[in-house]
Length: 339
Image (cartoon, rainbow, N blue to C red):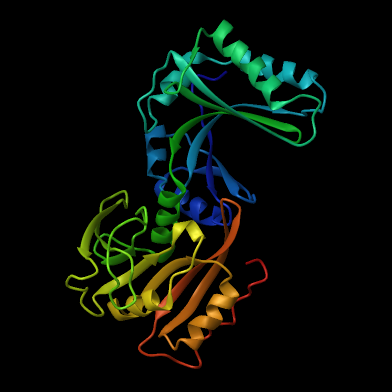
């Protein structure tokens, strides 16, 4: 095993692989050998990167960042494949893994491990059998103990390939989706953004105000890593946001489980200035687009992406705030076949 690992991959929300790749290209100088594997729920972006692994922490649009520790090709359905994977992992350097893990986002107990195993395809061995074999190598050869805060190791067998990896970064789907919206819309540190309870639990106590039943949160500043500092500046029953004072709007409800109401969209139209952009996630986007036209709201759909949120097929939409409602706005000219 080489003393340094230069092969990595980022996992993305299904449908947003290109956004994650673009984020990688902008954040990582010297990125090479890029390759996308598009998936259903989760896609993967593979790349080679030879500089400091700490720079990988700047990929905020990804669900996770993994180091490719070992790969085994030509996996068959038989149990001999378990032996091949065991042999490959037996040849690894624990020092290299521990050194790499130090550059990750979380503090780890390097005397322990936490192994996640997934098995896709037809094989004559089970996930449990594969996990037991790898655990035996980790414990008997490397002296590691099983523990929740240990080295986060992942073994994924898909078809004829097995990848053994170390997770360096893990983020929630809410966080990854929010940063994808930030990246797609090109939000900068100077911009003012209205964020409709993006990370809230949905249990906040607030009365209805002009159809808006959620907390209004302003991401007033974005630091160098584009992490939003969220400040509640308006709550139902209190002073509302000044009309046309926001450059951008971001909204989705319960990770795409429910659409925004027309009242909430009307409030977005009030506070986002003409020329501003709203990014949101909706279910049944073709039907939703028709309802948007019927409501005579001053928005035009600029772009639409089909995405997969935990098995739910949704549409990520970018809306431009118009000066006023237009019958000629191309709300329904988007190709919705995949949405």
